[in-house]
Image (cartoon, rainbow, N blue to C red; front, side, top):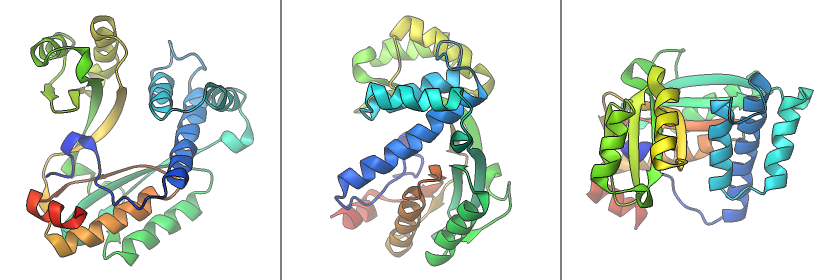
Amino acid sequence: MAGHSQFKNIMHRKGAQDAKRGKIFTKLIRELTTAARIGIPDPAANPRLRAAIMAAREANMSKDTLERAIKRGAGGDDDANYEEMRYEGYGPGGVAIIVEALTDNRNRTASDVRSAFAKHGGALGETNSVSFMFERVGLIVYPLSAGSTDAVFEQGLEAGASDVQSNAETHEIVCAIEDFNAAREALEKSLGAPKSAKLVWRPVTTAPVEQAQAEALFKLIEQLEDNDDVQTVTANFEISDAVLARLTA
């Protein structure tokens, strides 16, 4: 299994679902306020805000919470002024990792991210130290109910997608970042609102890891994702199904 499979990261499940949900909401609220602050508070004219609203609804955020976050960003509240940061480094086994954050204290966030890498056998690098191993693409995800594999494939190509893949859970449509907005709008007309639509990092090359390395790597990813400032963690690891089965048993 690749670290970029379905553009998701593997995480250990510890059962603290309420706490985890609270952290997810914290991250979503930051994205909502930032999207509203740097654009306009109208999702029809603000693609980033529209994507953030989709993610919030997917996480079952209440309408009141969602609207309050947008109003805070649109009102320019000082406590809603988050700075976008990107950190790059290597994890156990030479795995390349990109960490994206929204923070109101860059020194705190940098210290926390650096500490997490060091604690789990990794090393934080300079900007662009690993990003050359990834490509920035648009990812538009639809549920299987959106249509048959062939139908979604055809609609994706017509919308300008560079790749369309269907699996047991979703249809995933990939496009170049310059085509992202046009592709999303075309697909919304033909297939309806997507489950999610965002820009992501897709590994160009992958790094195979064994069980011992994978255990440390997953702990690093988990600690990073547990940080309220961190929005996304992307890694280019490759792990066999056999090793994955032993880790999740």
